[in-house]
Length: 418
Image (cartoon, rainbow, N blue to C red; front, side, top):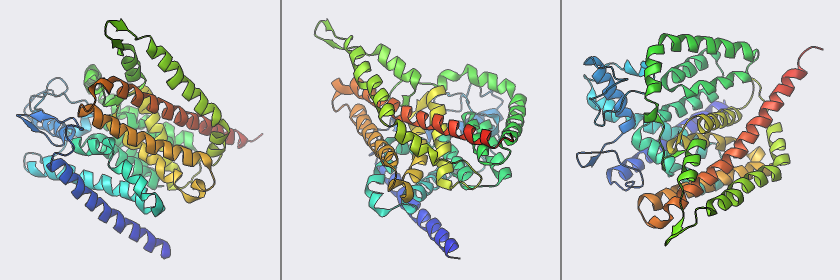
């Protein structure tokens, strides 16, 4: 009974906090305070709201007019082609209720997203961290994903629901839905490792998903021909590819002298050495931390959320160009790190949490300086330094995944009858 009352209280507070934050974000956008820190999508001299959501709606409208929106989408102000799954081309009643779909629905998405953030950051954890957690809420990744109403916002909500839900059929539905929408959420299928007979469940999931994707193979071919549209180079992306391009193109000149060779010293001292030192120094801490990441059917929501978020972030970082708005998946690490049992007893939990705080804080500060041209001469260094922080952080997360995977395999092997 008390558990139900507590859960009802948390849901109520999440709704209240989500509503308050939605109003605050609406004011920040309406008063244009977020621009140009958030790069505006400008048409006819004005910024277009929810641009990543409206391109999907416009593709639906153009499809009704007979256009192959995978090749051209003149209904969109920037003629952006459709780069998502076929399922998003079946949204009904857009013409009938345009204001609802173009304005109110993305606001609802934002409210749900902010309510979930309120739940995982504020409701479940100690109030003494609230002032620090504000850094995450008003960071550039969160503001950007709301201003664009990017589909990754919905995938974050699905990740949250999959972590919360222990029902197999419901999780099958959610993960297949998200996978045929944007493909990379296929890694959410790792949630089935928390179940008994996990490999058979993953096999069934892959079989169903690939059957659906096979039926959409013509669309998939067109989407991958448009891959230049969903891989970008610049401030709003970070990945191994993006770091490589930034590093290769980075030039240092003073007067008539070329000091570009200094970047290799920078790479050695500020990238390679910190990665080596961080992981070597924390080797035993990471090993101890991952020993508590026991993957079972009764694993807590926080642990499930942590594991799934780590895998999604790593997959995006290694495989895709990871736009800044995908950094919202880092938020999935926080509930587990702030669980009192671990924050009080595990040094690495504290270390990783405050590393995330510093990373989000500096990312926001760097982008504010960069976009507002407060110190233009520093812009290349800001980008490079942001990539450096991201790479060091990702090296730790990848290390956690490797240790967790080894622990999982060891546990599975120990269960095999001799």
